[in-house]
Image (tube, rainbow, N blue to C red):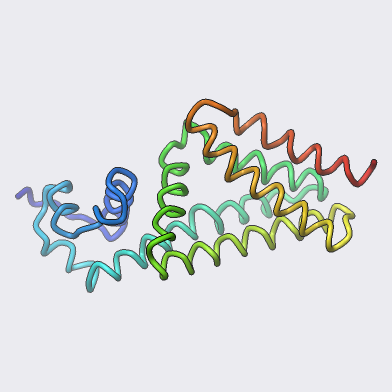
Length: 190
């Protein structure tokens, strides 16, 4: 096998490739090592076991797909409605065809969560963080608490559904999601 210096992140990236291409059952040390053209010993330099790799994957997903997005939105603070719009546009861009891996990771993790309690808990945590953040955005935009929660659920459900439709060219996430937000914001005025 080639003498490569792999990082923990290299292994996590390869594990996501395996997840996207073969499902959770494809996250096997031996297969990933073969794909990376290294020995299994390289894996054990970075991880205790496959469960440790799974935890690292979920941590990276949270960091990249949620924490970093919120930080990016917060770093360009605008008015509440503009902040929601910025969040929608970043989310749509991250899940668009130019970032196909991000969209496929989301779908793969949602599917994986159906079979694995640890992944299900991580998904619930991420969904709650995202819903709380969007709810806060609607509250800052002047909506009452109950309506903010409802709008956040509608917008988030639209993101998940439109993302799935976009993978089959049945929706344009970057156009349709901002339209959903605009419609929700209009309910405050109307």
